[in-house]
Image 1 (cartoon, rainbow, N blue to C red):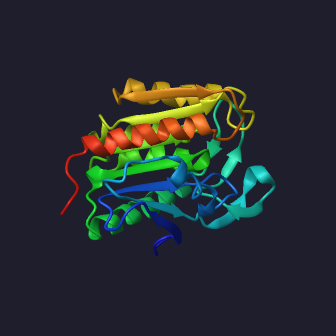
Image 2: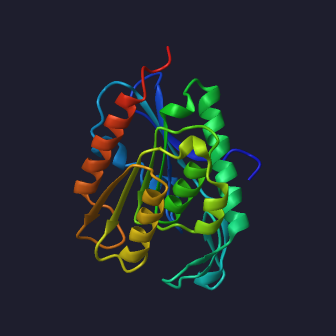
Amino acid sequence: MSELLPAIEIETAPNPGCAVIWMHGLGADGSDFAPVVPELRLPAAPGVRFIFPHAPAIPVTCNGGYVMPAWYDIVSLDQAGRRADEAGIRASCDAIRALIARENARGIPTARIVLAGFSQGGAIAYTAGLTHAEPLAGIVALSTYMPAPSTLAAQASPANAATPVFAAHGTQDDVVPLALGVAARDFVQARANPVTWHTYPMGHAVCLEEIADIGAWLAARFAQAGPAPA
């Protein structure tokens, strides 16, 4: 992952002053969440650049070695502790850091960037966000879990010790059980990160109420991040 990940980009206004890097789930691609942008109903200002990167296609052990877009290999889907490829997690976090650096080079400071993700992409949002060396505007973690909590605890960055988190989960999720989402929430809260937590009566998905809640949260975060760069 030495080169920048390919990605879909959508800007809500010319010369955006904020960015959201949004990671898709296992087996999907960056197009999965692109239709969400207008449904967030963000204010006209500040403009936001949404980046929806495509994960590389790799064999996924828990799916019989089938090659599909994935942020890392998953060895086991055991609810008590999913066994994830930690080297793959680190590589994906590095790839997301490269996208953050590209936004910095385009004039958007890290303090005006949110990392977001669904399912496996949310696991990367948690891990990359909480270990990043500069403070982010926020982290959005949807229907997800903490893939390597011991590693994250050892590498957590003080810069993001107080970064706000929006975490949400479906109460009927049979892919990533609610208990895993609650455990991830509790892990982040124990670090003293402020967490906005929502549950919705749905499975492993997103719903319109959730999208509206994310939009309101993002608008508040960008409003609190200070003036956009000139």
